[in-house]
Amino acid sequence: MTMDDDLSRIGISLPKNLLDRFDEILNYRGYSSRSEGIRDAIRTYITYYKWMSDVKGEREGVITMVYDHDQRNLLSDITEIEHEYHGIIKASLHSHVTHTRCMEVILVHGEGTHLKNLAEKLMAHKGVESVKLTTIPLEK
Image (cartoon, rainbow, N blue to C red; front, top):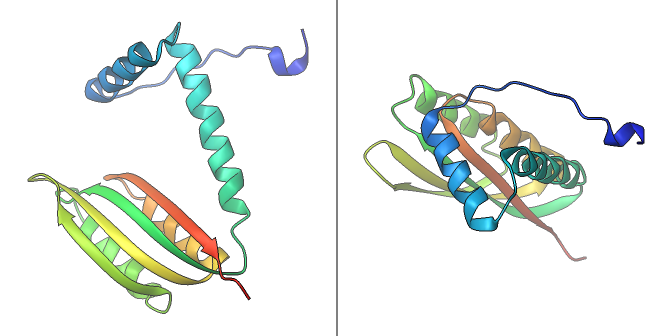
């Protein structure tokens, strides 16, 4: 067994509805265990993080974000962040998905590291379910 194959046991706490949804996906995709699904999810997260760290140079992009608008202070925090990055935000679209969940689509243009910083600031807040940054480099 190599060092990469050594297993570590961890304990995590998850809301029941999140675990139930995860189990449904695992079952649908045919995973043999939760552990294998969690390992796959962590690998995907690491790959996405590496991809995000390569976002450099002038880029066009879109940030999609889903959040709970009832989360205390979240709307004011999001607004404050968006005002801080007003120079790279070109447009935004807000949609009420349910009574408490909202989706926001933000069109951005600028230095890739600034786009990434904006996305990371948004995703760091409690009540934000997901943030995804997709960019393309500008052709010269």
